[in-house]
Image (cartoon, rainbow, N blue to C red; front, side, top):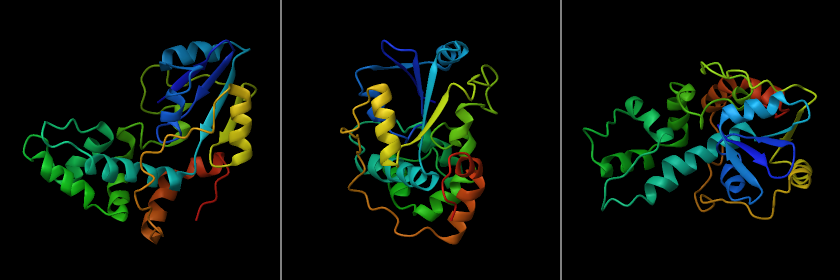
Amino acid sequence: MPYFRVHNSHKLVLTNFKVMFTSFTETSNFTKIKRYNAFLLAKQSWTQVHFTVRDPYQKAISLYKDKFQFTPLNADLTKPVKWEKPQRIFFSKMGLSTKHHSDQKIKETLINTSFDQFIELLEKCYWLDEHTQPQHWILDHPRYLFFKKLGVTLDQLSIYRMDQVKELNAFAESTGFDNSKHANSTAEITTPEELSAKSLKILNTIYKKDFTDYAYEMR
């Protein structure tokens, strides 16, 4: 999961993939660091920790649009494709294999997977990659052997919902993030108009604590 140190400050930024990660990597005064370094910074009582979160429904939609639509649509099949881990964790559930299936077959299968099908697959493997794991896991990760708990205290922690303008502006003011530049490579991909009852139930189950902890409405 991504961690950033804010230059010339005692500020640490925590986020998740599909929560403005690309925009943060392009922010000149943010430096990406490892979890170990974030752990050491958090141990210092004067470190201010800024944690950015996103509506779990929109985060799942963004992941689908990026990894199941935009990326395969733009894959260059004239050379071997390096499929990303947040795509590969689904392959066995989809009957796909990079050893036994062509990149063309994988591309077509990803693109032709509906959002509701994607959510059914997600239920079977969400814990396998940081793109799909619950956002709160960054603070206390149940699958890590080392530095499981990041050690952030409530006094240090400020949480910002990136889909709330006032909170995004407050985050930008505090950290120097330029919120006028949003990296969004999937804007032209059609967003599912309505989530099915089954998809809602799955997402509500997987991300229940994210909804509760970060005050997002569960449908």
